[in-house]
Length: 94
Image 1: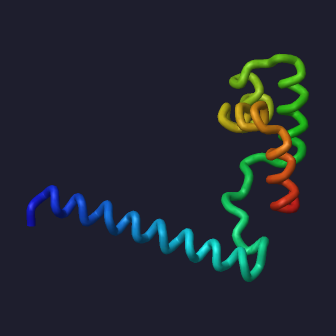
Image 2: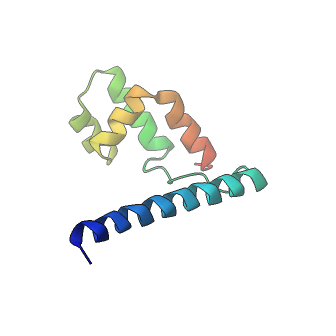
Image 3: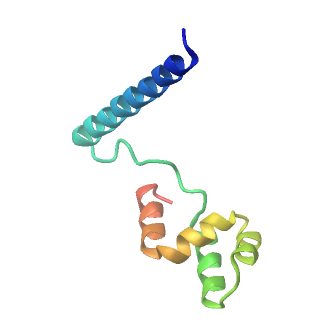
């Protein structure tokens, strides 16, 4: 088999898997809306409070991450979309 042909087959299979997964998720959500909630959050209410307090004090993402025990990405995510941070905790009953 030619290397390029094998590579293209791998891409095609990945796309087919992705489409099947999307269909399965859609089917599950139609049957039960909370059956697929996505990835669990990496922070809890206490950590969210720490992040918000430090964001209000204009602390940098590294300082926020160290104080809250999370990653800088979590600090950015909460900074740019605080309403979604609350919604994720509600969705996961945290």
